[in-house]
Length: 391
Ligand SMILES: Cc1cc2nc3c(=O)[nH]c(=O)nc-3n(C[C@H](O)[C@H](O)[C@H](O)COP(=O)(O)OP(=O)(O)OC[C@H]3O[C@@H](n4cnc5c(N)ncnc54)[C@H](O)[C@@H]3O)c2cc1C
Image (cartoon, rainbow, N blue to C red):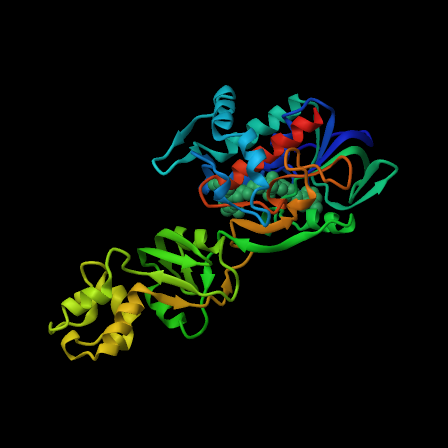
């Protein structure tokens, strides 16, 4: 994309031409400059939802988000709801579908990116691509934005530079560096909506089952998730684990129930006299391939089992408890949890309380949604909140 000629003093500069930056730019008319170090807008947006962009959910509730100050997202989410974004897409001629599970998908994520890009240009936005922002300095009621293309000055500054997941697509920790330089605090960023790695003792089990998928319940940090688990060579993944990773705190135990339909302790007791292994007895609830490997040496004949062996076998399948070594990291995480501490932001506008005319929106902020379109919805809703204040 061509770089534009730009003047040096702006009403507003937005850093980042991702989901939040593009939507914000197109939502208010003042002349503005977007600085983006990629050569094109919305590189991450283009690959969301496997290229089909799960752009929101029906419904979106504050409880679908994790935030250190849990009431913070309420006003912003109430002010911009899923039906407002779907109406906006209809007006812009973008086709989409609503799935049974409440997820909205477009036909092509790139259509949304291109629409947002054109809309922003119509709303007085100049784009400067291939421009890497390095620092921001507050000078005489203005911000001086330093880049590898020189300095730019602005009255209002919107940080829409995202989190640090998928660094190959342009993600950086710029927002948090700028926040810290300006004396603001940042909640420790962690990978979220991500697979979990197990330690050496569980690796052979996971490797033996890699590629297999099973419906489970996962309990972590007082939170219960239900859904499909996928065994990987490194540990566990699949939608239920990605969701659980949002709530998991390193070092805390995770419990998987591989047979949530049944209390296996009671069931094994009922079948105690049978000349079958526990995996055979559990067959109505779990494939023998999976149960044999999970049970390992506990997979003995029920009739020969001691009381302790029976309890251990039932626990292994109903309460498989382990401590994850870590996640598969930011390069595989769909989002970054943590970010700008929201106690420093106005809960209606996302303006920084102590630094006038400075805004943080999108994934850079310590508001992280579940899998299912919530993170893009937060990008839209937070962008709109800032834009309204910049009108
Ligand atoms: C593989 C994948 C699939 C996903 N699918 C979904 C989905 O279907 N639904 C959903 O709700 N969420 C999804 N997400 C999450 C969602 O994409 C993000 O939460 C959302 O894009 C965040 O928007 P943002 O504007 O805050 O940041 P981004 O969209 O990441 O935009 C930030 C922009 O800032 C630019 N930037 C960063 N640093 C600098 C710098 N120093 N100088 C200049 N520019 C800079 C970046 O290049 C980038 O363009 C997915 C994420 C991934 C990785």
